[in-house]
Image (cartoon, rainbow, N blue to C red; front, side, top):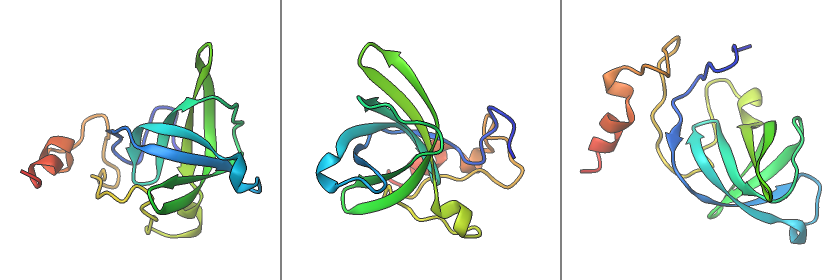
Length: 132
């Protein structure tokens, strides 16, 4: 298990609209949220108006892509807003192959790499250069 604060993947600040539903809940009980930052295997969610508990599984939908995510942490950040960290459940079931719910190609840190100090060829700025 990773120590607190150690991430396996580089997190990219990106706001994406999401539809969120607790696993097993009816589709009409879905709420809306957004991402604060994303990685190939998880995200920090914002704009939540419902309480999520660590260990709960939620279905996130971005555009036409859906994925199952486990809530890792949740906290109150304002009088009517919560944030939560989620990790894809598919990561546990696959070895090295993640399902890309975001529909984006994201930079990955190298195995054993330090995401706080990514190597120049895996930095967000380098990744962004391919679109210029």
